[in-house]
Amino acid sequence: MAGNTEPLSPRAKLAVTAGKAAAAVSRAAGRGSGSVIGGKVALRLDPDLLGALAQHLDVVLVSATNGKTTTTRLIAEALRASGPVVSNALGANMPAGITSALAGGSDAKYGVIEVDEKYLAGVARDVTPKVIALLNLSRDQLDRAAETRMLAEKWREGLQGSKAVIVANCDDPLIVWSASSSQNVVWVAAGQEWKDDAWSCPSCGGVMQRPGDDWFCGECGFRRPTPTWVLSGDHVLDPHGSAWPIHLQLPGRANKANAATSAAVAAVFGVPPQVALERMYQVQAVAGRYDVVHFQGRELRLLLAKNPAGWLETFSLIDPPPTPVILSVNARGADGTDTSWLWDVDYPRLAGHPIFVIGDRKLDLAVRLEVAGLDFRVCETLDEAVQLAPPGQIELIANYTAFQDVRRRVGN
Image (cartoon, rainbow, N blue to C red; front, side, top):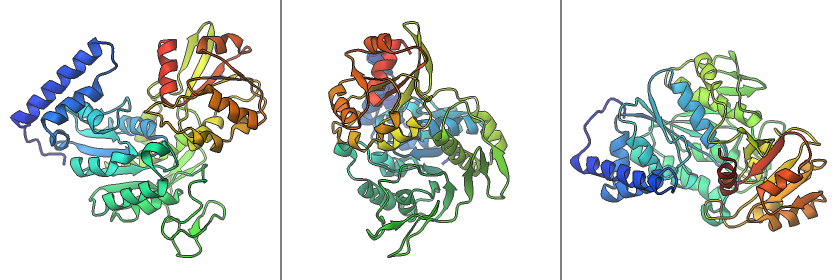
């Protein structure tokens, strides 16, 4: 925990040095930031390095299917009001990437760490977090992460007995089930637009009742807990009932929910909501997401959507028709190779938009749009899609590796 400033062992110091050298070689070879390979090398030399690097930090872990990179960034900004922060801001969220990030934070007071859902319990065991923020769980990368109820069960087991304060979304039954084994939970009413993964009770398998914003299981009594923080329109209500305005440069209801959760996390460390929310206003884009870029004489807004829940949120923040929309979907290792999720996305919401389809799996997406009865054109490249798009700012929505491909092409 924070305050323990025991120096690193010789072995840990060697591992950090070797990791930084490997990362530098990777960057020099043009293979990205080098954070993952650097972390892998360091952990190979010292498997206990992650815990050693975190020992002097107050650590926050953030995990979810959607919104964890943005929420990590918002929490980091809020906590900077109280001291220096180290964070894996670029989203390298497995143990190797987290290790690389913490290796650069010897002077930090706080560690704000995004964690891949599959690794949450293990990382929490290693770094003894003070706070764990749990936002949502929905289907994603089914070939890798498995079914959501199984993941919730792993979280529930892994967090049992944790001394961390769990800041959790009480509107997602899977999150409530995951957090309910913990002793100290702060419930946030952050909302849940995508409900298709939470119609059955995670506790008993019964059918979930959902009157209004409430939810409960009629069979076993598992129900929505009473929140202490509430997202209400453009405000967050704190535990005393005071309403604090949320002013963000990031668009959409989902980001207001991320800000509400971030304010609740910051409060655990004594940062007042007003200070936390004012600092969050400084965030304009997160690892390229929401950036507006100039490309071939056009303006493109870059939006990331990796799964049905993410696409639903993204559709709610694009400009209305006749704004042109480019959709790009890949199915590489980092995306999950199973594209069956495309059939769960509510693509009919795009009716009226001129649509252009690119990416490795453009034909899979084309079949889905055809069945939805939408007008679209399949293009070979981003350049072709931009040239064919009618006037106006273009909304570009892509899943994970497709988004990285686009950023490289537009020089962002």
